[in-house]
Amino acid sequence: MSTKDQLVRICLTGKSIEDLKAMLADLKSEPGTAASLSELAAWAIESFYQTGYSQQKHAMVKRFTSVKKLLRDTASAGKSDAEIISILSSIVRAKKKETQSEVASKNDKTS
Image (cartoon, rainbow, N blue to C red; front, side, top):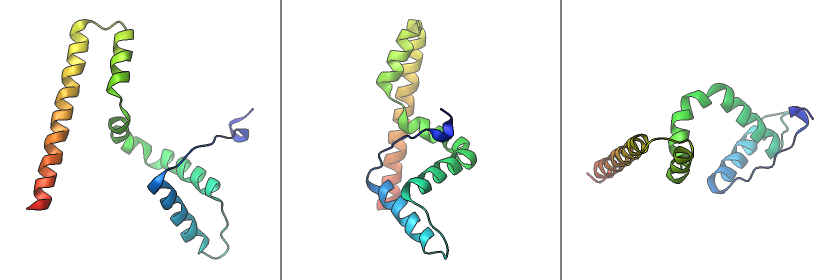
C-alpha cells in the first residue's frame, strides 16, 4: 500500500477544531473553492512540515517531552549514574528557568 492510499484518523480537540472550522469557512468564502475538513487538515500538515516544522521543532520537543519517558529511555539505554544525574540536573535547571520566566511574565503583565 502506498502512502497515498493510507488513511489515518486523528482526533482534534478544543481550539484546534474551532481553528480548522474557521479556516475552512474562510477558504470556502472565496469563489470557486471547495474542500473538506480532512482535506484542509491534510494540506495544513503537509504545508507546515515543509515550511515551519524545522523552526518549531525545539518548541515541540519542549512541549511534548515526558520526564518519565526520558528517564525510562535513559535507564534502558544503559547510561551511567553520572549521565543520568546530568540529565536530571538539566531537566531541573530547565524547569527552574521556565518557572522563573513565567513568574516574570506574570509580574510584567500585572505591573
